Image 1: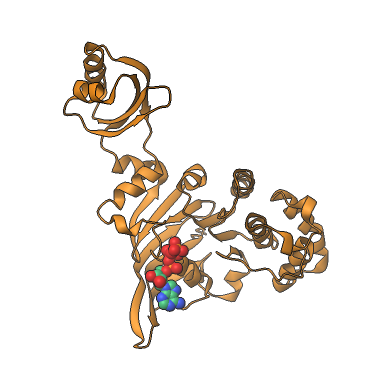
Image 2 (image 1 turned 90 degrees about the horizontal axis):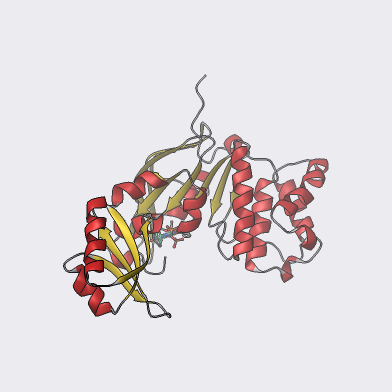
Length: 323
Ligand code: ATP
C-alpha cells in the first residue's frame, strides 16, 4: 500500500468577497503543493500572500472556491482527518480564567480525549515547551511567548500525526524559540509531519526540509531549502574584513560588484562581493594586496534563505515591507 502524502493541494483557489460592493478578491489563485509524511515543511511569503488562508482551507475553517486539498488522504475539512491534526492558530486566545493545566484539560476534552489521557500527558507536554513551573498560574499572567508555547502544547495533546502551525515562534524570546525548535525536531524524529507558516527565515532554515514561497496567492518557488538558495545565487559571496579606508578599498576593487561596505567600530571595513569562482577570489586578493590593503578576515558567505527570499521579491520590494 502506498503511503498518502500528509498534505496534497492541487490548483487550490480561494476567493473572498468583501466590502459594500462584495467585490471578489482571490487570496489563493491556483496553489499546488505536496508535503510528504515525516517532513518539516515551511510556508513562506510576504504579508497577504495567502499563507493563513491556505492553512484555513486545509483545516476546513474556510471553504475553498476551487481545486482540491487533502490531509493524510482525507479531503480537507473532513472530521476523521482533522482528528489526526494538531493546529496552532496565529493568535490563539485562551480564556483568562484558565491556568495552563486547566487550559490543557479544556482543549483535551474538546478533542474528545478521556480525562485519564489528558491527565497523564498535560504536564509532560507543558514541560516539553518549558512551562512546567508555571502550570498552575493564571494564563492572565502569561506573556505572548508563553501563550504561544501553551498553544503548541495543546496542539500536541491528542498525539496528532500532522501539525499545522501558524507562526509558532511569533513573540518568543531566543530561549523560547529554541524550546519550540527542539520540540519540533523531536516530533520529526517520532515521524510526525509539521507544516508551518513563519516569517522568521533563519528559523525556517534551521528546521525545515522543504519550503514553498507564496506570492499573491501563487507558489513562487518550492523545494529543498538549500537547493532553492543555490538556484537563486550566482557564484559565491566573498566576505572580507579589510584595514583601509572605504575609498581605497573601492579603488582597489575597481568595477567589481560590491553588495556591502560597512565600517566597523575598530576602523576596519566589512566588504561583501559577488564573485564567480575561485580564480576571481584570487584576483580580488591580489588586487587588494597590490594596493597594500591588509586583509584581516576572509570567508565565503553561504547564501541564506533570507537572501533567496529577498532576491525573489526584488522586483516587487513593496511586498516585503513589514514582513
Ligand atoms: P500575513 O503574513 O500578513 O499573516 P498571509 O500570507 O497569511 O499574511 P492571508 O491572511 O491568507 O495572508 O491573506 C491573504 C489575502 O486575503 C490578504 O490580501 C487578505 O487581506 C485577504 N483576506 C484574508 N482573509 C480575508 C477575509 N476574510 N475577507 C476578505 N479578504 C481576506
